[in-house]
Length: 189
Image (cartoon, rainbow, N blue to C red; front, top):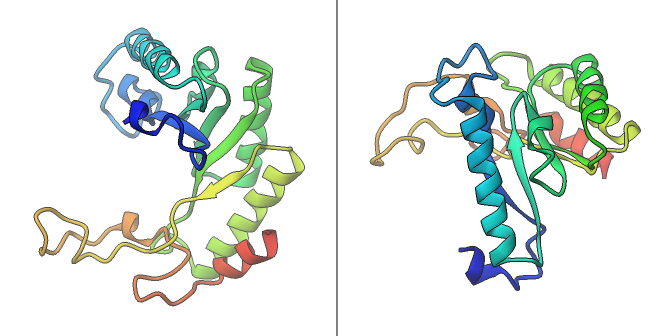
């Protein structure tokens, strides 16, 4: 895939691994802890080296969950995921900046409207966007555009997946109606 698209001008960067730090137990609520940290980071080093050799034209990153600064030696910019409040975001940014001088991208942020009211989702996203802008991050990406319909999120389809909070992170509902967070995103442009 990298070879095929190495000259594609619409690609900003290769994200070589999503939340790889969970594999070594950075998030204690997800009990994978399958591999030692050094092994996961060793894989990341090899993967980024290989991608860079195949495509010297694009940037490389890896979106880590809680231990994003660990990716700094291997990536062009540090991508991190954040599912907490704005005060926690400020602390995380400070910690990452103490560990690296590489640019920071808030690669995933979002809030389930099964866990909070629609207006609270909008308010929390507005606070996160304000902190991201004030702190000079490369940018922020919302997880996700649309809620996931339970009759389309299982395999093989059609089937009904169990309803849970993961289905409600969208800023639009599954029926395409906008939640209040859409207005926050429009105002942030």
